[in-house]
Image (cartoon, rainbow, N blue to C red; front, side):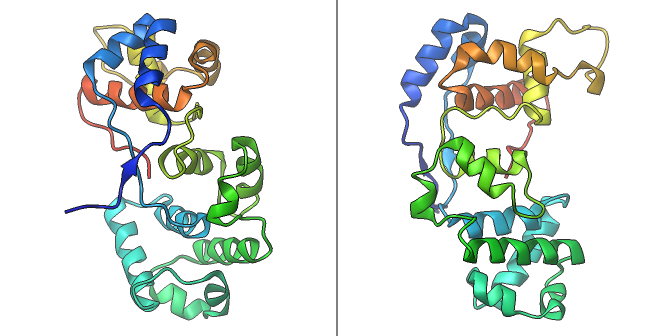
Length: 228
Protein backbone atom coordinates (compact mmCIF):
# COMPACT_ATOMS: atom_id res chain seq x y z
CA UNK A 1 0.00 0.00 0.00
CA UNK A 2 1.46 3.37 -0.97
CA UNK A 3 2.03 5.89 1.82
CA UNK A 4 2.48 8.96 -0.37
CA UNK A 5 6.21 9.24 0.18
CA UNK A 6 8.43 10.32 -2.67
CA UNK A 7 12.10 10.46 -3.57
CA UNK A 8 14.23 13.48 -2.75
CA UNK A 9 14.83 15.90 -5.61
CA UNK A 10 18.57 16.23 -5.08
CA UNK A 11 21.15 13.81 -6.48
CA UNK A 12 21.54 11.34 -3.62
CA UNK A 13 24.12 9.25 -5.50
CA UNK A 14 26.29 12.32 -6.03
CA UNK A 15 25.86 13.23 -2.36
CA UNK A 16 27.05 9.80 -1.21
CA UNK A 17 29.98 9.79 -3.63
CA UNK A 18 31.06 13.26 -2.57
CA UNK A 19 30.75 12.52 1.16
CA UNK A 20 32.77 9.32 0.75
CA UNK A 21 35.53 11.24 -1.05
CA UNK A 22 35.80 14.06 1.49
CA UNK A 23 35.36 11.86 4.58
CA UNK A 24 36.45 8.22 4.11
CA UNK A 25 35.38 7.36 7.67
CA UNK A 26 31.85 8.45 6.88
CA UNK A 27 32.24 6.65 3.56
CA UNK A 28 32.67 3.35 5.41
CA UNK A 29 29.25 3.89 6.96
CA UNK A 30 27.76 4.89 3.59
CA UNK A 31 29.04 1.66 2.07
CA UNK A 32 27.13 -0.37 4.66
CA UNK A 33 23.68 1.14 4.13
CA UNK A 34 21.92 2.23 0.92
CA UNK A 35 20.41 5.72 1.03
CA UNK A 36 16.64 5.21 1.22
CA UNK A 37 15.29 8.52 2.56
CA UNK A 38 11.83 9.26 1.18
CA UNK A 39 10.04 12.52 1.81
CA UNK A 40 6.79 12.45 3.75
CA UNK A 41 3.53 13.40 2.10
CA UNK A 42 3.89 17.08 1.38
CA UNK A 43 1.31 18.83 3.46
CA UNK A 44 1.31 22.60 3.63
CA UNK A 45 3.65 24.10 6.24
CA UNK A 46 0.57 24.79 8.39
CA UNK A 47 -0.54 21.15 8.23
CA UNK A 48 2.98 19.78 8.80
CA UNK A 49 3.58 22.03 11.81
CA UNK A 50 0.14 21.24 13.22
CA UNK A 51 1.15 17.60 13.28
CA UNK A 52 4.57 18.41 14.74
CA UNK A 53 2.98 20.33 17.62
CA UNK A 54 0.62 17.45 18.38
CA UNK A 55 3.48 14.93 18.41
CA UNK A 56 5.78 16.97 20.67
CA UNK A 57 6.63 15.24 23.99
CA UNK A 58 4.16 12.42 23.41
CA UNK A 59 4.53 8.75 22.60
CA UNK A 60 3.86 8.18 18.91
CA UNK A 61 0.70 6.13 19.44
CA UNK A 62 -0.82 8.67 21.80
CA UNK A 63 -0.06 11.54 19.44
CA UNK A 64 -1.44 9.61 16.47
CA UNK A 65 -4.68 9.02 18.36
CA UNK A 66 -5.05 12.75 19.13
CA UNK A 67 -4.32 13.68 15.52
CA UNK A 68 -6.85 11.12 14.30
CA UNK A 69 -9.54 12.54 16.61
CA UNK A 70 -8.75 16.07 15.45
CA UNK A 71 -9.00 15.16 11.78
CA UNK A 72 -12.19 13.22 12.40
CA UNK A 73 -13.69 16.27 14.11
CA UNK A 74 -13.08 18.25 10.92
CA UNK A 75 -14.39 15.71 8.42
CA UNK A 76 -11.22 13.62 8.05
CA UNK A 77 -9.28 16.68 6.89
CA UNK A 78 -6.83 19.12 8.40
CA UNK A 79 -8.78 22.19 9.49
CA UNK A 80 -8.02 25.45 7.74
CA UNK A 81 -6.23 28.09 9.86
CA UNK A 82 -9.40 30.19 10.03
CA UNK A 83 -11.55 27.24 11.06
CA UNK A 84 -9.07 26.29 13.75
CA UNK A 85 -9.15 29.80 15.20
CA UNK A 86 -12.95 29.77 15.21
CA UNK A 87 -13.15 26.38 16.97
CA UNK A 88 -13.79 26.48 20.71
CA UNK A 89 -11.20 25.41 23.24
CA UNK A 90 -13.63 22.79 24.54
CA UNK A 91 -13.88 21.15 21.13
CA UNK A 92 -10.11 21.07 20.73
CA UNK A 93 -9.57 19.79 24.26
CA UNK A 94 -12.10 17.02 23.54
CA UNK A 95 -9.67 15.76 20.88
CA UNK A 96 -7.04 15.32 23.59
CA UNK A 97 -5.09 18.55 23.11
CA UNK A 98 -3.56 20.12 26.20
CA UNK A 99 -4.05 23.80 26.98
CA UNK A 100 -0.50 24.61 25.87
CA UNK A 101 -0.87 22.77 22.57
CA UNK A 102 -4.21 24.44 21.95
CA UNK A 103 -2.49 27.83 22.36
CA UNK A 104 0.34 26.74 20.08
CA UNK A 105 -2.08 25.61 17.37
CA UNK A 106 -4.00 28.88 17.58
CA UNK A 107 -0.74 30.83 17.24
CA UNK A 108 0.24 28.66 14.27
CA UNK A 109 -3.11 29.40 12.63
CA UNK A 110 -2.83 33.14 13.27
CA UNK A 111 0.72 33.30 11.89
CA UNK A 112 -0.37 31.33 8.83
CA UNK A 113 -3.18 33.81 8.19
CA UNK A 114 -0.86 36.81 8.57
CA UNK A 115 1.73 35.25 6.26
CA UNK A 116 4.51 34.54 8.76
CA UNK A 117 4.06 30.82 8.02
CA UNK A 118 4.27 30.63 4.23
CA UNK A 119 2.21 28.57 1.82
CA UNK A 120 3.68 25.44 0.30
CA UNK A 121 4.38 27.28 -2.94
CA UNK A 122 6.02 30.19 -1.15
CA UNK A 123 8.17 28.10 1.19
CA UNK A 124 9.85 26.39 -1.74
CA UNK A 125 11.29 29.74 -2.79
CA UNK A 126 12.74 30.55 0.65
CA UNK A 127 16.24 29.75 1.85
CA UNK A 128 16.81 27.40 4.77
CA UNK A 129 17.67 30.34 7.04
CA UNK A 130 14.57 32.28 6.01
CA UNK A 131 12.38 29.28 6.78
CA UNK A 132 14.02 28.85 10.19
CA UNK A 133 13.62 32.53 11.02
CA UNK A 134 9.93 32.59 10.11
CA UNK A 135 8.71 29.27 11.48
CA UNK A 136 10.44 29.59 14.85
CA UNK A 137 8.27 32.64 15.50
CA UNK A 138 5.38 30.22 16.10
CA UNK A 139 4.70 29.30 19.72
CA UNK A 140 6.09 25.85 20.44
CA UNK A 141 8.14 25.57 17.24
CA UNK A 142 11.88 25.42 17.80
CA UNK A 143 14.90 25.01 15.57
CA UNK A 144 14.89 21.19 15.75
CA UNK A 145 11.27 20.96 14.59
CA UNK A 146 11.97 23.19 11.60
CA UNK A 147 15.12 21.22 10.76
CA UNK A 148 13.08 18.01 10.66
CA UNK A 149 10.60 19.70 8.31
CA UNK A 150 13.46 20.85 6.10
CA UNK A 151 14.97 17.37 5.87
CA UNK A 152 11.93 15.10 5.81
CA UNK A 153 9.20 17.28 4.26
CA UNK A 154 10.99 19.74 1.98
CA UNK A 155 14.01 17.59 1.12
CA UNK A 156 16.63 20.26 1.75
CA UNK A 157 20.09 18.67 1.32
CA UNK A 158 22.28 20.67 3.69
CA UNK A 159 20.68 20.62 7.17
CA UNK A 160 22.67 19.59 10.26
CA UNK A 161 20.58 19.10 13.44
CA UNK A 162 23.42 19.14 15.95
CA UNK A 163 21.10 19.03 18.99
CA UNK A 164 19.39 15.83 17.83
CA UNK A 165 20.10 12.88 20.14
CA UNK A 166 20.43 10.39 17.28
CA UNK A 167 22.83 12.59 15.33
CA UNK A 168 24.95 13.15 18.43
CA UNK A 169 24.98 9.44 19.24
CA UNK A 170 25.63 8.36 15.65
CA UNK A 171 28.53 10.80 15.39
CA UNK A 172 30.03 9.48 18.62
CA UNK A 173 29.69 5.87 17.47
CA UNK A 174 31.24 6.64 14.10
CA UNK A 175 33.99 9.14 14.88
CA UNK A 176 34.84 9.19 18.59
CA UNK A 177 36.94 6.74 20.57
CA UNK A 178 34.49 5.27 23.05
CA UNK A 179 35.33 2.87 25.88
CA UNK A 180 34.50 -0.64 24.73
CA UNK A 181 33.98 -1.93 28.25
CA UNK A 182 31.17 0.49 29.06
CA UNK A 183 27.63 0.66 27.66
CA UNK A 184 26.77 3.84 25.78
CA UNK A 185 25.39 6.65 27.92
CA UNK A 186 24.67 10.37 27.60
CA UNK A 187 28.19 11.33 28.70
CA UNK A 188 29.50 9.85 25.44
CA UNK A 189 27.33 11.92 23.12
CA UNK A 190 29.18 14.17 20.69
CA UNK A 191 28.98 17.91 21.28
CA UNK A 192 27.60 20.38 18.78
CA UNK A 193 31.10 21.83 18.34
CA UNK A 194 32.60 18.42 17.52
CA UNK A 195 29.92 17.75 14.94
CA UNK A 196 30.05 21.20 13.34
CA UNK A 197 33.84 21.13 12.95
CA UNK A 198 33.87 17.85 11.08
CA UNK A 199 30.68 18.63 9.17
CA UNK A 200 32.25 21.60 7.38
CA UNK A 201 33.65 19.12 4.87
CA UNK A 202 30.17 17.61 4.38
CA UNK A 203 28.66 20.73 2.82
CA UNK A 204 26.41 20.88 0.80
CA UNK A 205 25.18 17.41 1.78
CA UNK A 206 24.86 17.58 5.55
CA UNK A 207 21.28 16.27 5.51
CA UNK A 208 22.52 13.09 3.87
CA UNK A 209 25.36 12.81 6.38
CA UNK A 210 22.86 13.31 9.23
CA UNK A 211 20.68 10.54 7.83
CA UNK A 212 23.69 8.23 7.94
CA UNK A 213 24.42 9.17 11.55
CA UNK A 214 20.90 8.03 12.43
CA UNK A 215 21.64 4.79 10.59
CA UNK A 216 24.82 4.36 12.66
CA UNK A 217 22.56 4.10 15.71
CA UNK A 218 20.57 1.35 13.99
CA UNK A 219 23.71 -0.59 13.15
CA UNK A 220 24.96 -0.32 16.73
CA UNK A 221 21.94 -2.09 18.20
CA UNK A 222 18.35 -1.14 18.80
CA UNK A 223 16.96 0.75 15.76
CA UNK A 224 16.28 4.44 16.37
CA UNK A 225 13.11 5.83 14.85
CA UNK A 226 13.73 8.77 12.58
CA UNK A 227 12.25 11.99 13.89
CA UNK A 228 8.80 12.99 12.69
